[in-house]
Length: 423
Image 1 (cartoon, rainbow, N blue to C red):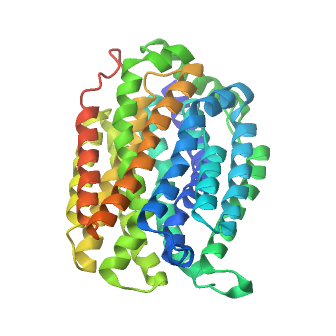
Image 2: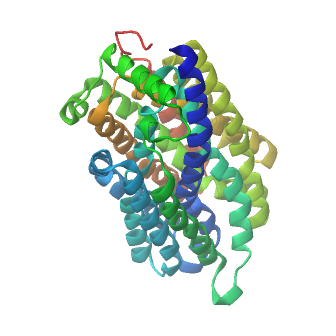
């Protein structure tokens, strides 16, 4: 069995992860590019720190509201069609951000963007649970989720270049940014509709023996583990809710960093918009390496909780200290450690969260964890925005956000893992 499983998993990783990675790069870029647009948009439209942070975070309210129904629909109608629908609709709304003229239109379009994108990330995680046995899952998820940090690496310089188009064709630079970065989602949505393979039996690049072995391994794991297989079971599981609360702390820091990083870097460097984009890419580059290394080590050892907790400690403490940096070098070093610690949590976390979910219960449970967690995407940016408005400084807001992440790491240690073996 293992002789057949190993090449099957390797083939799945080669065929699926790069494509899903690309989709998530586009997704993450379209939700965080507002942070770079703010370098011009806030002044042009007269947005205060509070107006900007509320609009940036309101994305997560509609996203959270529609997350579970979207993922249940995905499980019913198929990932290929539903993910294609999600991508096409969010690409159109993202490009439509060029029409923002007031705080009201800013709030409405960000709310619609969250509604359009709801279900994308948990849908992809659900697809990965149908392809990868638990012992290989942290590495696969970490490989897919490096898109979060690669989007930061690519998005910074690209957004800086797009902002430099200010005035071209009668459009502001921030308008060009939204239009050009929204179009790839629409194009890739049609590619997904034609090419995405949802499970091993759909894959022509696996032999019949490999398809059978991969499916049998995943089914055997479910049979030998306390798995939640129903929607009701997932929504009433204490472990699922505990993980959801723990996950809440991750988007708090993730989106506080994503939405405010350009302005933090600008405040300590005084650099041009393009150079701010380049400097903002450094923490993401460091994080890309860290999350793959930690995800692989978690798979090799089979340990999840301490990998998550220790990464949270590094990320949270570094972010708290970053708020007190007053020059560019220590700020970038601490922001790099903060981003690396945060990113390193993701692979082990989702490997743990999916280890006791199966079938339609996996779709509902993953969506529940992600939807509750993503409320943190609303909370984090607003903490920084409100505290900065009150203090004219980033220090206290970043310290609060960092402390929340550390608390999440401690909370994960209280989660009772499956009482039956993982493999």
